[in-house]
Amino acid sequence: MTMQTRLLTHIKQLVNIRTHDRPLYGKEMAELPCLENAWLLIEGDEIEAFGEMESIKKELPKLPEEQTDCSGRLVLPAWCDSHTHLVFTGSRENEFVDKIRGLSYSEINSRGGGILNTVQKIKEISPEQLFLESWKRLEEITKMGTGAVEIKSGYGLSLEDELKMLRVIRQLKEKSPLQVKSTFLGAHTFPMAFRENHTAYINEIVNDMLPVIAREKLADFIDVFCENGFFNPEESETILKEGLRYGLQAKMHVNQLNSIGGIEKGINLNALSMDHLETMTSEDILKIKNSGWKGFCTLLPSAAFFLRMGFPPARQLLESGCAIALASDYNPGSSPTGNMNTVIALACIQMKLLPEEAINAATLNGAFAMGLGGSLGSIMPGKLANLIITSPVPSLSYLPYSFGSNCIDKVIIRGRFVA
Ligand code: NIG
Ligand code: FE
Image (cartoon, rainbow, N blue to C red):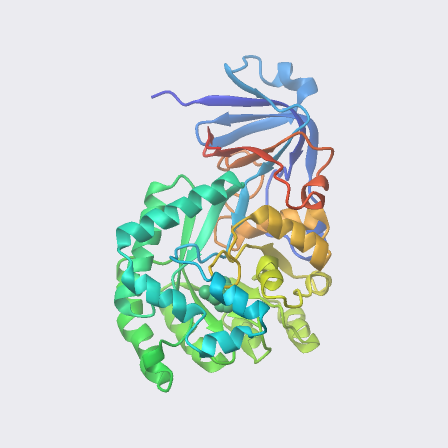
């Protein structure tokens, strides 16, 4: 079979072009290299080359048949959403209304609602149906420009049901053209039966779940919810250390509702990312700054928005030299959307990220935050051709400015139009 060659021409602005790349820290995040009036050549599933329209004749003596005129449009790397829980079933709008009436997130959790509500539904659903529902969400986010996604387990909380979730994620990996990464989140909350016996559940994670998950290669990363009423810093550390023994790098849900000492654990464990960070003390930020930790602060503004919380201190984190990634947290409890365009807009509006910073955080840093920086997240020859073509827009800043509007016209995944 011959490889399909495709040329995008007259691109108003080709966004996030790099000749070599690595994660972006602090001030570097404000630099978003772009090329005006550009062309881009795709060969098979990869980006082959790009350049200026002025010199296209010289650089590409023989133009391919498949051409797409991108006049007035921007072309960007597809979004890299490095934190989601999109394998779930059922919705929780009843809790949404309870919250409007005044109940807090932790009150809902302690009544057996929240995460445990979804856990019950996961027990009842067949793997086939769970796959179909999750597949629909993958299709939905693809249309909104997402080209790579990390998905967590964590609504199973027993060997059988965690495996059910992780095997669905594996099926999604195998069948979807998107790049999918899998994270084991057995430590999302304590199941009802283990509320008073934390050690027993942690032993179950460590002795029963982890060995099988590692043997079947069902996870790329391990995660915990480090929070009051969930896993304390010591319990989190125990679980993440065990994960590391199996080669699973650590991620953390940390400092979402309270600052209880999880940041220090994440630094010491060399976590790939520490996620949420809505509730950061100045000591927490200082600790990160002085530690030399090179992981990602993954911020989830749609979850903060949905839960009516204060937003993470993005500017302070940047001033401290951190690498920020933006992700959707797509899940039925705290962010029932996987729309990365909304996430980017919220990051600019509520956390005062510059559009350039937000786009770097949702592409290049997002890719690195799930171990995909080598193949995704920027416009670079040799990387996968996962691309967004916008509708005609006046400028890059128009994307977050026109929040709620759909500026995405076409999406290319592995060199093919998928939306
Ligand atoms: O990332 N904070 C913990 N876990 C999820 C919420 C899960 C749920 O409510 O179902 C989060 O926000
Ligand atoms: Fe989450």
